[in-house]
Length: 415
Image 1 (cartoon, rainbow, N blue to C red):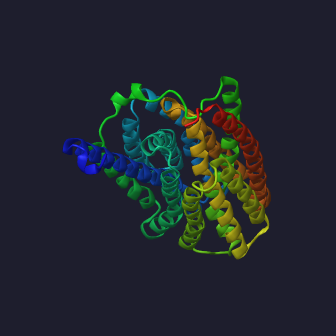
Image 2: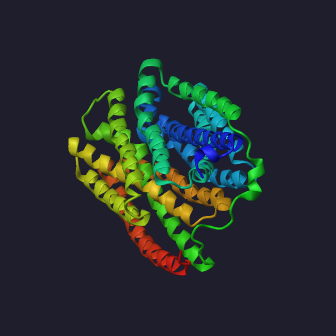
Image 3: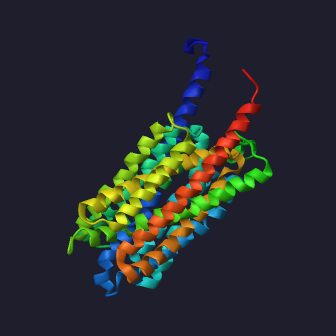
């Protein structure tokens, strides 16, 4: 049927639905950038707070563990509420909650109040990944390029956090680094509620079967592997992103200005965004599980090199490690979507991201302990070991998927 033969009313309705779909994807991309940005303001600002409060880095960075702990814990109820109540309304809570929490950090009169406000920030920031990813997969049909671009937006949030936060703290004071994104979050929440329709009527109509159904026993093994992957990827990811400004500060040269440290860290993290764009294209040529193994292997090599490198070679090694840890996210999400029904995705992703982000609290403790014992050479050495465990678990997963997909193809009727 040609486009001209479609009734005008039906064509207009289709165009309106397509615009709504693209608008929803746009808001989800923006939310992903905000989500990672707001959580990485403090790890950059904290370098300047050493002078303000007269405390060492190891003690001040530990205050952010409250935010990262909440970021993991509250992803569980967020995914459950989204599947049972409303994914759209949960995203509105995300925008407003993050905005108010950031403002609270900015006005905090002491470190105790700051830690409480950081906990609230982590609680609201936890909403995005289990809820936003379920919405994105539903809206995009789990297309590699769409998921990759969404990942790039998150990476840009990570990348820009160091540079922008350092600039605001240097020129306007550290509190301004929290006030500016607070205003952006609240304004975005208002626009989001105005432009996006409610979705309460969709809760009971979502599919309850996966693209490739798994028998219960095999499903338990499959998601057991994803637990291992989530924990190792989460630790590797968080150690790199949280410690990166300080790694650059120590590994490049002494007495480097904070704004330059933030800019260099941003440049390294941009490599993750570029890698994710490439992965979005490569996944159309290479099966997701094989690509998964390739990028996790590169992640191990990058972390291992960084543990022994200094100066420019350190930046190159960190760029490879960052590119790999971000590149694996897209293919990881695609694999999860293939074996998970839409009606359950919010809850399944909440478990995955609970494990990924709860590891941030452990990562902060690990950074503080290892840095105190042997500097960032030891931190990066342990991170290389974690990256190797991630790679090994990926190889086991690849072997399992090859077997499952072979059986699934054999049971499909011929066309």
